[in-house]
Length: 465
Image (tube, rainbow, N blue to C red; front, side, top):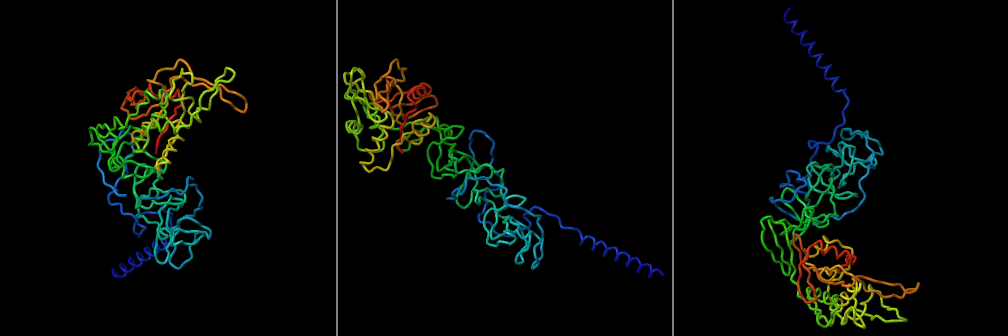
């Protein structure tokens, strides 16, 4: 009697278990976002050191530690990514069975291909086992290698829209900082490499010199960002450096990594006594000598085209000051045959003529319109800048004027009397240093006073690169 009851209970329990098993097996499969547990390929780049995301809080650079590695994705497109691919719910299919995603589906789907389960690149309903790059589905953008999402990859990879920061196989659109791949270290903004960025930026290893989106590990010198100018050695801000650092003809004054002053060693040239209005030629001579060219003031005077003022029916006529030196540089403003001057285009062309005749590799560039901060960046990079202002930054009380022949008839041209050309050869926190050819002296003026007269003459400037 008891034995029959035990057999009856066992039969009931067995029946209930079968029913439950049948119910569970009939439940629908739910869509899920790709996760690391569904992977198995090897990452292209080993990220052993990279364990946390770079800090991106806005504050002035401060000392931190570093490691380094280094070369070169090219920006492939400037178009931002757009939603261009359709999507269906991911499905799991057994090997040798037909996937039930749409025949025209393009994206990334979870399936089994050649016995390997995972998330695969699909184009027009077909798995693409050779696909490599960054692709998207409804869950995000993913790094695909050999057709399959590689959840083991952390680095930077590309698609048609650019190069992207990848973390465990997925594009991190919130990434801001400096990250690496097999080609180097890159400045990333909102997940994408910014090839337009040049400056000084940070990651968890320090602050780095970045040129066109890439860390330049060869950079040694002074470089700027929104916080100031910084002394970098081998690409990294050296916060241990305090004092004067001299590199060739450039000297930096540094305080805990921050550059507070720059000075260039320029051989001074005196325009006096022979060329009282020849400041343009004298400044050009100083600049060319700085770069090692064989030039004298007399030779530079001869290299600059000039045309004297002439008087016709009581009116003074002369050339365009942007095409020739107006007058005679051996004369003064008030001489019978006066000397006036020339503007940046004339000096740019004349210096390039000298450079070309000596088979030089540099080139004079007219950078008229540059702001003072840009000029200081050139000086910090070891480049003296030819600038137009006024003698001793005095405010002019009169003008030089003459008529210029035009197809529409004579037109009166005038510009401030007392205009003077010097070389910008240094600066500190408050001042600029000008190599003045009128007496061959280096003079110190406040930044604001110089900038005022520099703007008065139209921000005219020339550099040699």
